[in-house]
Length: 524
Image 1 (cartoon, rainbow, N blue to C red):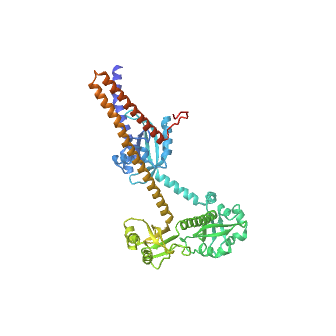
Image 2: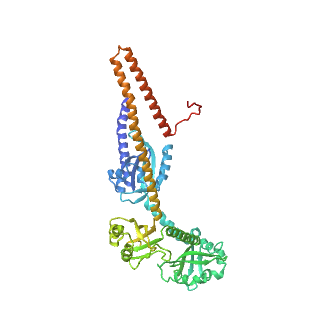
Image 3: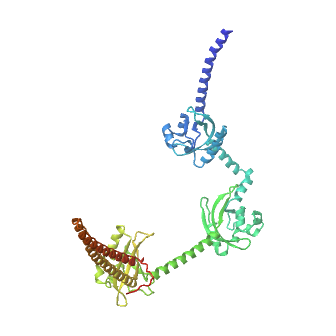
């Protein structure tokens, strides 16, 4: 019996080894047979990469190093951004419950394209003791495409007419089909189209025979020729024409629609018109209001600019032309606008000679073009100029380069105004500043003189105190001499204290901290 047990034990060991070898080969065979591979990640945020087999890497077109670098070490980075949240939720719940999961999502390949995959995974314990998720990833792009193709075939079949009708009815745009005739008759209409035309549904529309047999009755007479030429003027397939026009609804309201038409073949192979349109009445109304607001804003801006600048000059430096905005208004002076050069030359003759050189440098046309080429966009100058009243005035000229959306011509706008009041105000301010400066200098001089006098006044008693102290030290045994020195030191000290009190009183007066005592006193 003992001998028999030893034989079984000896035979069992090879069986275990065989099973391990079979399992390993089966795993390898399975990983090679599926259109995809095996992928694993640690159960941590982003699922850091734990394992990926060569089959998976080859299927996606990566080497191991390329795959790790592309996903930045996180399995979730290889999933389509629109699918990440869904995959994280499903896989996360399975990991918490220690259960299997199955999910479909899009996975990125090395060339940047995405494939649909079916992922079946389960939580395991990694070799390093961390929780991990191992999943079998199978390419199902072909299945998805097959399902989509099958769905399209179902939609196209007559058995799915109800589904197609629901799709048509939920379209945000109106759709109708008409016979390929000069007077088009409606053969198909969706609910949205019926609603736009003022009917509750398709049945209510088809109940109106006069409109059903001639859809042009929904078009105002003024727009019918346009609709006939554009919408029902298409004769060949593959051509699409669109136009905005008005319609009259069943209850008599007028709306604006944007319509597009083309010629197609129906199920019987006959040509028909297909028209898709949508209601743009609100858009038209908003656009009209926006245009009104734009006009108001432009008018307000024009008023503000012309109020601040009585003369505005538009110039085309490239074409050597210029014009004055609102020449009928009272301007500062008369201009020669036959050309930009003529205008500058004419103005130069009225500029104070002291400013002419600077004026030419800043506003002569070629100089301006050179400035703009170097990156400058604005030029400003204040100068004296003789205006139409024959007197010299201070004038500011502010020239700005204007963006040209049409061509490369250099455009400018010059803002001109008289600044006499500003200059007079500046002169008054300068005078006030000069007066204040003089007062400050006088006060400073007074303080300097005061300090000089006070230093002299302080030095005198201090010298007496120092001198009497030195004499007293030399006659330490002479009481009479020491008594005389101490008396003189006391007199000088009291004088010095009185002087310091007077200085402090002046400091309090200057700072506004002097306190007056209301007491009776006798002058005698």
